[in-house]
Length: 297
Image 1 (spheres, rainbow, N blue to C red):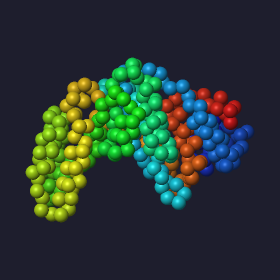
Image 2 (cartoon, one colour):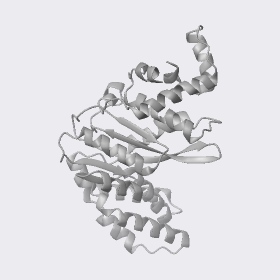
Image 3 (cartoon, rainbow, N blue to C red):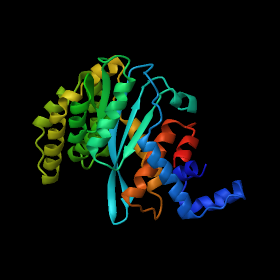
Image 4 (spheres, rainbow, N blue to C red):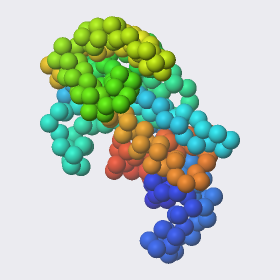
């Protein structure tokens, strides 16, 4: 019970919570922290059984988020394996139907991607079933997929594309927000209906005068050219693949931000990693019985 509470609540708040819930239990902050970390360590060594073969097609997404550490910040790597459903609502039961598996670590990017892809392999209905692999354009994501995940379709997250379109639109129409918004909307529509060709043509012939706008053109044209093969949105939408990485953005929030980025929260990696593992396990398995891990601890 204390480990589950510690996964979701600051350790300093737990003594008063326990006092209200069970007055006979009296534990100090360091003991509560130690219990949660020990269970997290045992969960990492012997993870719960996965969710089993997929009931629908499978998607995977990975990303990073900065977690405050003593002496600075460190990137926490997060991943989610799930079964997308365009018709799913936002209720708890609808979200549960997506069968999300959460993974997170403060270890290397390669460690995270390798583990996420191993989870994908355990979920594939067949060894050659194609899965959707989403990313924001970072090289380490695509390189990891290429190394550990065969039979996939790489998809550039449409939300990141939209952000870059907004930057470009603002540079094109610095004094006219309405015109900038209209241009951005037109590009988003064309990307979903026609693919990236027309956007690349427009950016290629755009010749802005201000140095700032020229830099925006250089950076974003290069980004879209490099990601062109991952921007076949008409095909993805036609075949029912997800085009946004909202699932992993949510994973970064639920796994890291909700627990690690509170006011004054600072940890060292050796104490943060077990808590991250504990949170990932409980998010994946909300009804997970922690007693076997408590006995092992």
